[in-house]
Amino acid sequence: MEKMDQLNQWIRDYNDRLRYVAYTYVRDHNRSEDIVQEAMVQAYLSIRQLRDPKRPYPWLVRIVINLCLNTNRKYRREQPTDFLPEQRGKSTEDIYLQMSRDKEVYAAIIDLDEKYRTPIILYYFEDLTVREIAYALQLSEGAIKTRLARGREQLKSALTREESDEIGDTYSSSKANLYTR
Image (cartoon, rainbow, N blue to C red; front, side, top):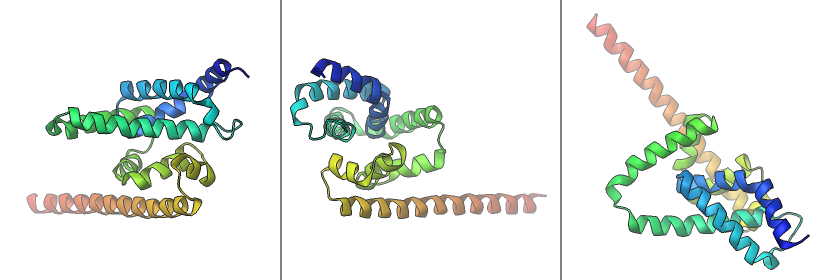
C-alpha cells in the first residue's frame, strides 16, 4: 500500500480514538484536533519506523502522547497559572457530557497521576492490550501491569472516598433539618 493510502486509512480508522486520547491530555477540543493532525503528518514522514505495519495504533498513540506532552509543556509556559483551574473545570465538564461517561469515574481518572492515568485510559477506553500499551509507552509489560493495578487501587480509593463524603453530607444536611424543625 502506498504511503498516502496508508495515511488516509489510518485517519479513517483511528482519528476519533486518537483525538480522545489527545483530549485526555490537553483537555481542549481544538488543540486535540491539531495534535492528531500533527501526529498524522509525523507518522507519514516517519512511516519506515513503524515496527508492526499490521498494528499501527500503539505507534500512533505514542506519537500523539509525545505531542500532547510537548504541547502541555509549551502551554504551561504561555498561560498565566491563575486561569488554569477555571479553564480545566469548564473543559472537563464538556468532555463529561460529550462522552456520556460516569462523571465521578471520569473525574477520578483525570485526577490520577499521569503515569497511572495513561495506562488506565489506553487499557479500558482504547482496548489496548498490556503488550500494546508497553510498546506505546516504551515500558515493560510488568511496569504496565503494576501501573494498572496501582491506578485501579487509587480509583477505588477516590471513588469510595467521594461516596462516603456524599453520605456524610446527606447525613449532615438531614441532621440539620431535624434541628431546624
